[in-house]
Image (cartoon, rainbow, N blue to C red):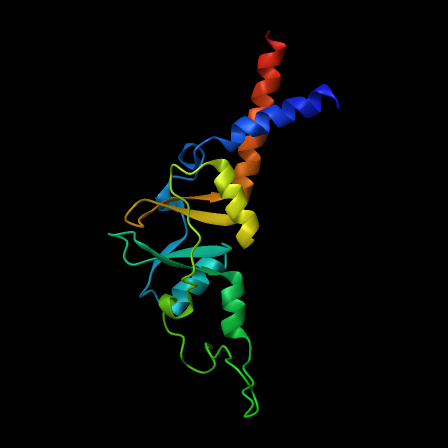
Length: 171
């Protein structure tokens, strides 16, 4: 094994222990957020430039209720062909059928969230387990306080590597 491999392994082991709150995106005002009662048009407006939107009960409470992704919009835009011979349950949420009016009609309520004190390791494990590239960070009252993305983790680990290189050269 090369020295670089051992250094990266050592750095990664320490990076795993960093609390999510130290590197998460904390500027909640900059996150894509809508209230449950927001119109479907508002959802389209945000998702035309972002890949997701967090859905909160209200902007005052910031209590996280769900998430809407591009895939969710694909599901409601897709033409529905209802066959009388369908066995089992089918997804009948559709703009075409007229049952989608607000964000709460589309949002996914199965949220995998992190606490600010959770570690980077916990975030990576959850991202891998649930196949999510972004996770909300919520406090004890389920109030949205930030988000962590795979991209953020990659950028931060790269900064750790660069910092380590600089400090090694100055020794």
